[in-house]
Image 1 (cartoon, one colour):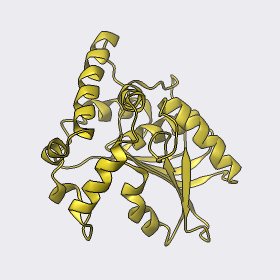
Image 2 (cartoon, one colour; image 1 turned 180 degrees about the horizontal axis):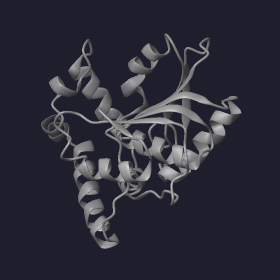
Image 3 (cartoon, rainbow, N blue to C red; image 1 turned 120 degrees about the vertical axis):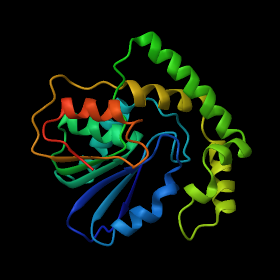
Image 4 (cartoon, one colour; image 1 turned 90 degrees about the horizontal axis):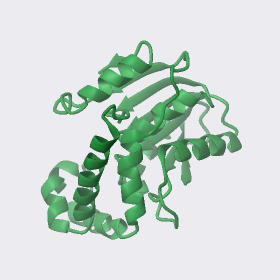
Length: 229
């Protein structure tokens, strides 16, 4: 795991985990850097996502190591925590552990654990693994499911970015890909949920409300007072 810091001169501390599962650590550097104008940002790249040796193991392990690392950085309270997709799952687990108090949290299209029988979870996992492994090995398939004109940030060169992405995908082991899809959808949360004074918002896009229906129902029943946007 690697934690990148931006805006270290700023007082308000923000945890930033913008990974949708298998994005490289540099995919959201511009956003983290922009946040660093006003906040002291801790941008987390989980194991297997930072270009360093080692595999992603689980949401639980990531949160445990992240919490310890933040404490080593002297963090005793966070002004905010932001997590996108699997990053949202990491933030949910982080909040549930209560290791470090958080004033406000944004779960952006975050993944909550499945409530299906385990055999159903295993079938879904198998399909996810095969699909994602195929995408990481085929430029044409990647561009088909994630058109560059839609998924490339304004001001970036789509060809150059997708060239870099395909090169980075070579660093992902089968173990990392498998563990990402299993753990992001099946991580453990303590029950009942701890009582928090965190202001929690769950964000979802206009076209993903149906896809995130179960996630929204789960987080609504788990944490009290969640706002949806």
